Image (cartoon, rainbow, N blue to C red; front, side, top):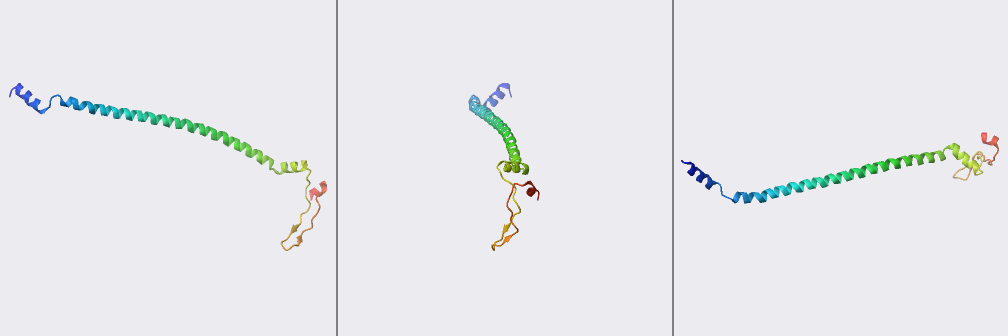
Length: 125
């Protein structure tokens, strides 16, 4: 078999010109799919970064608000301390009460009520 015959046999097996035309749309499709995937990843990454920045901003704001809440809670606690309540009551002109009396549901009085006075000796009881 000569070289000419071999070439003619191979030429019959492979169609001429049609394969290059069929490859072009496939290559273009693959390039478009890869490009779209790359663009999608880029957009997803940008979105994740934006969410990360927003998250860090909100965490900082949460820390600031927590500090403010704790400061306000300490202020409330200082106003409700027994010493502070007594001082504010005295500033308003209130005096410690005497011995309390209790009214039972049947109308009887339990204990002997005493009038509140500003007498310091009365306060020691």
